[in-house]
Image 1 (tube, helix red, strand yellow):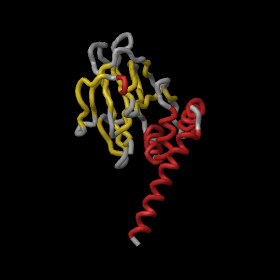
Image 2 (spheres, rainbow, N blue to C red):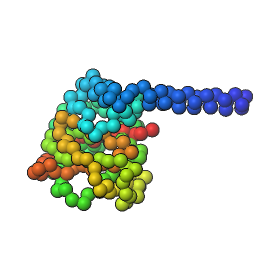
Image 3 (spheres, rainbow, N blue to C red):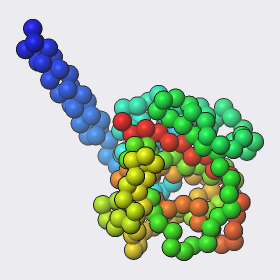
Image 4 (tube, rainbow, N blue to C red):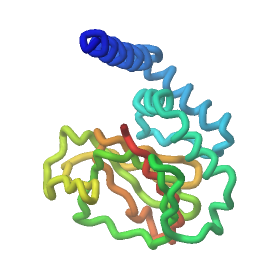
Length: 200
């Protein structure tokens, strides 16, 4: 009986791995970009993925955890984002959202950050700012990862910047160190929605 139980557990584990590998191999990067854009459009989200969004990773995560992404889309489409009260709201045990307002910062010596437990989904409702991201594997650790805060801080000599406006949403996976809240041109009052979606 014990042998049968172990065999069933092994078979289940192999099945999960096989499903994950199948998801990974289903689409090319170009196909994933199209799929992700269409997914959010069908859900009623007006914004499109920013150029920095890793579409294959996002595609995989949506396929593995559809309910988490459904919660994100429903929040974006069923609320007046301009009048929501500031602060954090729990959407499920795997997703929470934080509504923020702030004035963008001067570019300086700010550090990039990265998370392990949660994916960042950031959407600028009004105003504009610069966001940057690069591979965590290329970054130098400045402040080691703190599991209690789910954040570590890093430096990268060169990484691309993007202008964040209401036209785009940004998604940062644990493999990406990122940098936000920086002024583009003049300082701007920004209202932003930040979702935290659990990775596992």
